[in-house]
Image (spheres, rainbow over the protein chains, first blue to last red):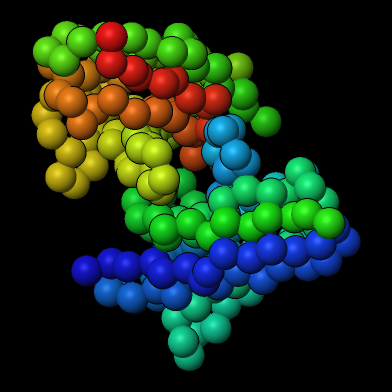
Length: 119
Length: 108
């Protein structure tokens, strides 16, 4: 069965970086795109960007350009999302979510990784 | 960027009643690339509807989607206790993927 298992909760200080992982199993890793979506406490869903695990190409939401980097490791079927220059407004749950193509909905989601930014 | 506006913000209904949730886009959503998700507290979102009207795998037939262009609707024909949650619409037809702000469906 398809599973996306994310790394554990993180606590970071303002200005630091965080790197969240998402390990995929139960399907051909390179056949599906992976998105990252975040949700601030009590708020809605915010799309951050997409990575193609096959070639590694990425596209980021304008809001995060210059601060986010998405990478993948095909040897371990894992994608990573690194967010730098953290500020308190980045406190959120970060999700990875799978999409079959760029014009497809997100059919499987990871369990979420809480990231807290606090001094 | 396509902005999605959901209404109402909160919907209070009783089990067995019919729920109608609305999602309006700031510009036409190409090829009906509109999805609906359900999210319960502490859980990741779950895909319910894609292509505006197609149910995702395993989704009960009491959930249905309709609409095109800029106006879309999610209907739950007879509410079950497990249906009380937050619902989000999403467009995935442009190079940026946007979500509505959500509708909270609560027990009356």
